[in-house]
Image 1 (cartoon, rainbow, N blue to C red):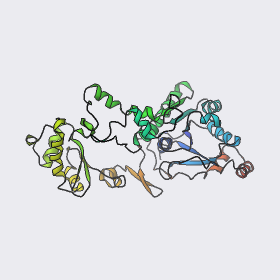
Image 2: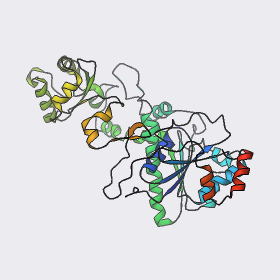
Image 3: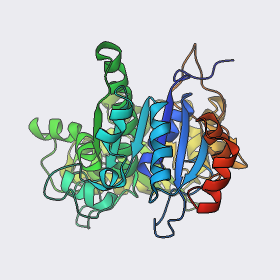
Image 4: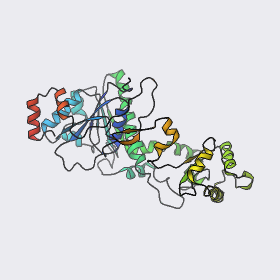
Length: 380
């Protein structure tokens, strides 16, 4: 049975919040061995990623990084690792004693992944922030929202997960590939502001082509067009419409019972309000799932808007096993798919410190030393 395409890699992850755990979840999903270092004796470490999903597939060792012995344990882990991930503010890892120079002195082949909001340098590097702040200055927040309304934060998907954790996973794997030529590790500076900006590349292309010049909510793909919109149905549910191409749009109108001859032109954004009104009058006559069934076999590009808790019930997602149940929690399955080395179904992650004794034993610490560390609070 395949263990996944990253089988044989070892990742050491310093526990943190959201983006780095997501990136490490991806690596674990694809077969890497990920050891999470939870911080013992630090009641002020703040929020961490909720247990049950982002921590899947991990073992955990709980170490007090404020002690020399705790730092040495982490450095011994580094000696065995391919990738190291931390999410501290710039300079913190160095002060602790687990910065890039300290770790790569032990393991020159180490890929050292850094996950921050602002990056390792620049005027804001030392400042606090969250997803909404990073996407704001990246230009990714301003375009999102309805015409005449405030920008609408898309939860924390763009900064934390798309521009953060996903880019982190890609970055450390790119550095790992380069290592096959150089034999050396390197530092990967992953900043959510950089990643969020990268996600707007298409908008910059549209703007340069004169196709994205209007205000928020007034362009083709930001609900400015009636053909790229959501519509309410009779039961209070919604459908998503994305029939951008003319031939898909004509099929869409046909299934609604509307004629293009009686409507404003598809791409006339000045008349979008009238076109939306006519389309909305039809959608409100039937419940969401009935419309989903009507469009299921068509290229009209209409889909039911599902909650995250409904999505696993959709026939397409069921056919592809897009969701799995791990530890009693239904959650997204690993992605993408691999034909020769498919990753196995994820397993629940260990609770903080569950594997401390076992991992220390693997590092060569005998039971007397482990008992002393436990008594002294070096580990939990």
